[in-house]
Length: 346
Image 1 (tube, rainbow, N blue to C red):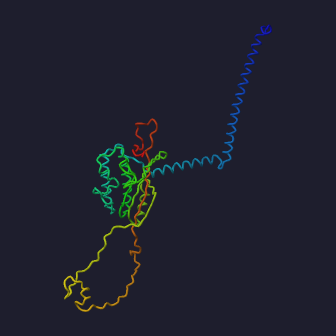
Image 2: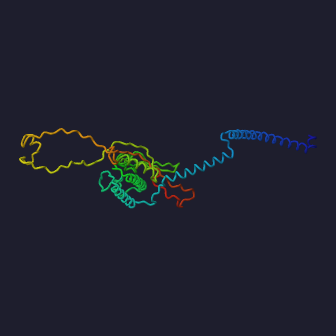
Image 3: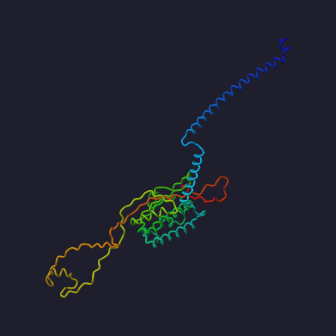
């Protein structure tokens, strides 16, 4: 103890050195563990780099520039393709009065265009003109506010489809079908399909299904398909069913001349019947007549093929773009593409 008292400074320094040595040893062991982990990550990065370097094509500057060019080309293709898909823009404020006015004016225009094109519409029900699947809406005085925008979208799409048929001058429109709107329209019955309007949130699109049946000939069918392809809207033909149709026509009655007055023949009696029973003179002997062969002149305009009418059933889909979503913090500012449709969540 005497030695410790005499060398107290040395002992304290020695104790401090031992403590510092222990702390340094603990720090060194912890650092070695972190170093080992960092070394493992470094080896993984090196392996990843080796894999990238050994890939084909090699990520050199020329290939990087080529990839950027391809990316620009794909971006331009997507931008041009989006132009084919019409943007679904509906009136911001649509009430019963404005919808009724839009409905009646559109149906009147379609009926007039059908008459001018010579297209026969389906038989009328309780209205003076065909309602294009919207007869119930014409009867109702008040419609649910939530159904006005979907019905307006269907009205616009049906008008586009009908005008394609009118431009093709088909013989007759047999039926139109659309997806149901609201609970009052039973899906899969009458003028309504079992399919529903589908919204794709990833692509920001909405798809409207329709079915149209018309009668005509093959040239009209070709014109209808061409009209759908060239329409501003993006039409997708899902199904095409062609059957033998039956166009209504008035039979041509043979024209008979005025009956000849034969002496001695009672009024109203058939001359052949009177001759059969010997009422006037013997029955003249008929000379055999050789059958005549049809003469083909080969001139233009002769009917070579008598085409039969067709009944065509088309299953269609119209794909429309939805307005761009507003970025966060932009509430209250008008978007560049207009308001969002009320039927986007059907």
